[in-house]
Length: 321
Picture 1: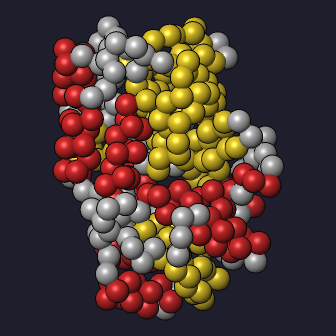
Picture 2: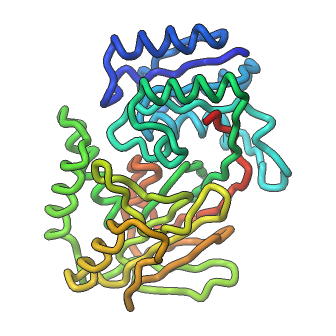
C-alpha cells in the first residue's frame, strides 16, 4: 500500500520527536512518502498530487485546518468534478488517515480517534491491519464562482467573527487554545451589533427565515470542544445524514445564556428557545445577507460574504478508523 503523509511542522500539539516516532511507525506498515506543508493551501496541492499519482492513502498529521485542505485536495472541487450522483464517489480517490496534531482536533475526535497523536497512530495502525474503513459524507459551501468542502462545520456571523479574531491573535504568535477562544468570544460579544441582524435563510422546501445574527452549519456532532467538553448545538448531526443548522435571532444575554448551557450539556436533545432556528438532515440551503458578514469553514476564516449555499455530499470520503 502506497501512502503519502502530510505533516504540518507548526501543528500545535506535536514536536519533532513525536513526528519522527509516528513516521517510523507508519513507515513500517506502508510504503510511505513524507511531505511537510510550507504555506497555506500547500496540503491541498500535495493531496491533489497524491491523488493524481495513484496513492492508496493520504495521511495527515495536523489540525483541522490542515485536514480541511487535504480533503479539498483529495476531492478536487476546482476540477469541476460533480460526485453528487455517484453511488460511492469515495472509491475514486485515496482513503484518508487522520492523526490529530492541532488544538481542537474536532474531525478526528468526531471519528472516535484518541486526541493524543501517538494513541491515534496506534488506532490507525489497527485499522490498516484489519482493513477497517468508514465512508463519511461531507458538506460543501458554494459562493460566487468558488466552492470548498468542510468536514464538520461552517458558520456565518458571530461565530465566524470569533474565528477571525483568533486567527488575528495567531498571527502575532499566540496559540489557539480553548481558553483563548472562550476569552475572545466573550470580549467580541461586548462589541457585537445586537440590534441589526443581517442574514436570511432560504432553501428548497424551507420557509424563509429573516433576522439571523448567528448561523452554525454542521456535518457532524459535536460542533467543537472546550477542552474535553463537547459543544453540541446540533446533537442529531452525523456523517451519515445531510446538513444541520442552528440559527439565532437574538443576541441578548437572556437568549444566549440558556443556549450556551444547553450546548454544553451532553445528550441528544435539541436546544430549545423561541429565538432559535433549526434544520436537520437537509440536502441544501442558502444563507444570504444584506451586508458582508464573516464566514468560516472548519475553523478557517474565509473572509466576508453576502451569499453562501450549503450542500450535503453523501459518501464523499473513505477514512481508515
